[in-house]
Image 1 (cartoon, rainbow over the protein chains, first blue to last red):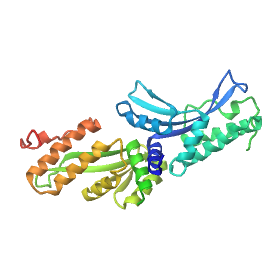
Image 2 (image 1 turned 135 degrees about the vertical axis):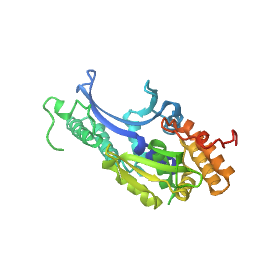
Image 3 (image 1 turned 90 degrees about the horizontal axis):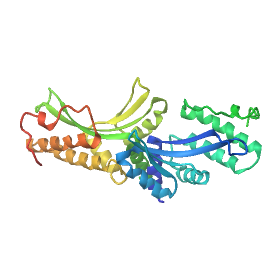
Image 4 (image 1 turned 45 degrees about the horizontal axis):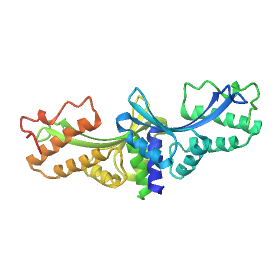
Length: 151
Length: 151
């Protein structure tokens, strides 16, 4: 993919997209929780072709059409999220802190150590401040009294 | 300005910006109406630095901070709008029709002939369909029975 295409997608992401990491409860996971990262692009459903264009560029993720008339193109698979963040890294401006934080989280998640998982959770908590989410309910503190104060 | 910066700005415009032309009543204008074009970029006021970045790139326009917590960077001066549209032309994807229509309107407005002004007004009416504006009240038909049906 050439740099102008990547710069275009980075601009689109900064204008109307999101880089988002959250801790979700997962009964089927050994630790009971998953740190899930996502990159999402939004657009009116009648203009969803731009989302298909991006999906073609990255070759992963899925497009959903919501009843609200808004569609989104979302990537959640960790390896793909990391690959896309690295591709967009030289061009993203507004969401640079989210992007760098996301890469740090993904790096921690590559390890299987509990300490690294907890470090990833603490870093994920920081997304709350960056993205002004009102809905986030599971924080590092939810994770069974095992979350050290600093990383 | 290098092509990756332009591509980034085009992506930002496609994601959360607008290219908009409208007919406005102007008592101080000979014809009583003005065709006004604008390019606008929006962002949360606490992240308005990205708008300042764009303003620096183009060296024109103004930034407004609204009480809603949203800021915008807007360019309305015709020559500047034309210059920016030409710069972004190779990179814009989603708003390509608006961009090409805007350039056609601006070309007509360069002439001082009534026929060209009316042609510009008819082309401007098309923005209603492209941008789904609910607020547009002045259309070509408002202009004193002088608007031919076709251009």
